[in-house]
Amino acid sequence: MKILYLDTSSRISEIALTEDKNILFHRILNDSEGADQLVYRLKLSFNEFNLKPGEINNISLSSGPGSFTGLRIGLAIAKGISLVYSCGFIGVSSLDILANIFTSAENIISLIPSNPKKSEYYFAKYKKNDGALTRISESSSGNLNDILKNDSSFIIKKEYIQFIPESERRIFSEYTEKDVMTSQIELTLKKISANNFSDIEDFMPEYVENYVPKN
Image 1: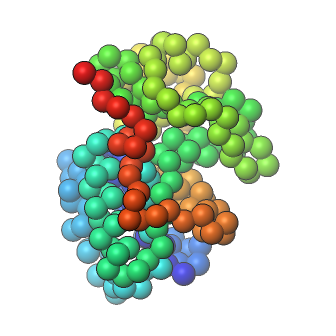
Image 2: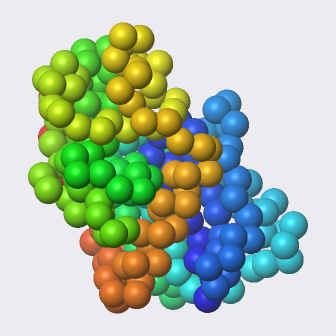
């Protein structure tokens, strides 16, 4: 079984392809490339491994919240491949992916910037025991100072740590570059095992579906 993974939820996009749990390739795009270069990088990677889009069985998309433009581009690519080649589609919350990086913790808060200049962030609370991630709050948005008052383990994507005040960065967990995609792969495989596929016809990124832009 071949699964294509797309993460266009932030300014640094990632793509990967697995076959029977083995990672065939994992690419982290340069900051300057952006999500609009995704198709080109996919084509290069497929050619390198002599693969064709029709060989893909399932597609996993990091579904936000996050970059409005990036999420729409990722969904357009995923929807196009899924509909043309009849692939299964799995949407995975970007907040879930971050929280799942933890091996074990009773109180986890993952954050994604909404409007970092105004200290506004999307966030959700979790716990992880025995490898099982459980969301213990609805995803929401709030002020960074209020969010950080929680007694929790915090995590945010590396490219966004710059928006966190230096005095607060020490409370954010560190991780390696490969951990975000590894987490997405793990959650995707669990969804497939549970036959928990998303409806590609009606699916919307979490940013679009659950949040109303503020004036």
